[in-house]
Length: 524
Image 1 (cartoon, rainbow, N blue to C red):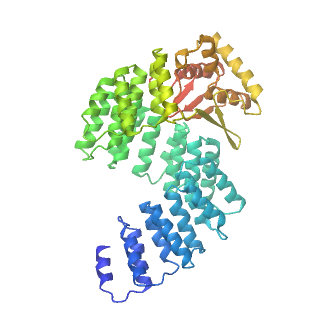
Image 2 (cartoon, one colour):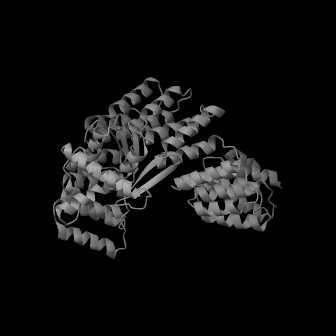
Image 3 (cartoon, rainbow, N blue to C red):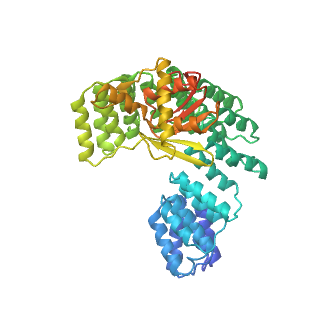
């Protein structure tokens, strides 16, 4: 681009094709910012834009994620009479979506008189990028109803949404469609399939997709490395990394995040430090905050809480809120009140209104029966207007994803669900189940605590699936918060009593329950 710019500056009167060529060149380069300067210069010379000007410019803005400049260009394009052209509108939909304005992208989409496949892909991907998987699936159904044929980009977005929702059955149907139309060999779509099967706990299918891939990129290897780690197969994850090295492929910094993640979730402390050292010395990759976060998590999960604190203090980078929150979580699990209060003080400086931090500290006080301190934390939450994120569990049945919250009574099968819950509790007690009431963090009677535990969202979701699926069918649950100790114990026994494999994906990892055991080996 530097050579192109020198030649461009020597042209006395560049025409619109030349201006567009420069804008496009910068939009597709590593540094798209000069595209904005070129456009401003073009306007100052009163050069009239054409149909190609704004799509190139909006591409640059989307890469820069500068929504204010995008809105300004939107206004200029409309004034110049180009705002209704489908190519310009597609650029605007993409720009708003990438800049975190999914609603603006959708509003513009709804107002468009003409839409093509690019339009649909842009708005569908916009909802994926902004963490709105339900809207993604709704738009996909609308797209099919309008008889627009999806392509590889559509399917990548759809698979990403399925992975977030835990919609394995729908994801499998997408996989079948991909094979049918010849898109299964598309590397981006294949990687999305890998991610889907990994995030829905179907690691065998993920491995099968990986083995069948003709073109395995480092992204493919990394996706499976992380997937194995998340599902509790730390040693397999590390063995796959070793295989990657034998193929003479160069791991990326993200690959090492996956390897350290594997060590963290399987308690491989020494191995974690070995890989961190190799990353720096052999591959010359300077650890980023994500790598340091894995190391703090590794030490904290394995009970080395003081060492985790020492690691943070000696980090070459300034610890962020995630690092301190990781330490706070470890303190809560292993009962280090002093360090927990110090970590919370740091978090107040960095992210004072994060609800999870209040909850973690409150949980620690409650586990020690310090009810007055629990009340103080909750009062501070109320005073600061901080609301706790409600826990929910998702399950897929037929063509729908069902959501349950604690004590949920909204499902039409409510009576059957609670009858099944009572049956579950009765049969579990025969197996020796005793409710883990320490997880009910309130100063109430033991009997009330046991009742509260029975109505956790994942138990309701499992009861719903036991009613509606045939014997022997696996049950998959996606939970937005961490599985509590009582639910972990209860689900192990449910898997044994009902002869079901139950896969639960919580906020931090997967738990594969089968025959009364969990894949995490209770290390969590």
